[in-house]
Amino acid sequence: QQPVQSPQAVILREGEDAVINCSSSKALYSVHWYRQKHGEAPVFLMILLKGGEQKGHEKISASFNEKKQQSSLYLTASQLSYSGTYFCGTEMRSNSGYALNFGKGTSLLVTP
Amino acid sequence: NAGVTQTPKFRVLKTGQSMTLLCAQDMNHEYMYWYRQDPGMGLRLIHYSVGEGTTAKGEVPDGYNVSRLKKQNFLLGLESAAPSQTSVYFCASSRTSGNTDTQYFGPGTRLTVL
Image 1 (spheres, each protein chain N blue to C red):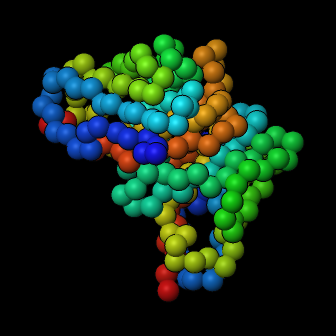
Image 2 (cartoon, rainbow over the protein chains, first blue to last red):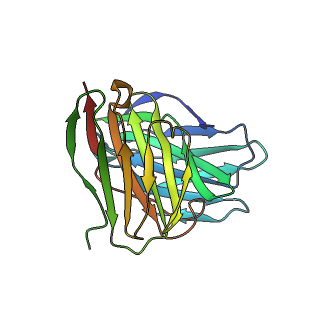
């Protein structure tokens, strides 16, 4: 089941802040965030693990609320380079191993 | 170190034709994945593999088959292409388990089925 992302799209001016949300109907063990620029492949941003561990880089932060089955990505003092589509991925477990279910994405446009 | 590569980059097929998409990675990753991306639908998992010789179904496996005969390669086959399979296909790999490790994506294959 795909996680649900909100908002679907957001337009910012350079320097403004944005929050992108990701929620799941299933219990979350980890949440992954990726960014995709137009015509390119998705690129890893961050992983948040149950228990609070966070792996990532760049000037982007995120939170993970296990009880609410939600994660939020915080983009502060946005830059033009932040434009793109942001995807959250939640864990999919099966007898064969683990994979990710990605949301439909949030399109972010940062304007000068 | 090329990372994840995909062949071909573009392809146009007629309905009913077959083809194979090749994904190769040179990072010695255990896990490999195939996704399709359609406008407004995000990335949807087709099939994945947790190691050489093993494959598993994802969200949208119908109409596709896969094989992982070598650790570095993951093949996606369309036996009888349909217009609904027009999409951009991404391959990805991760060093270990897909729930705790980074996925590295290839550049994508744009497939059009007429």
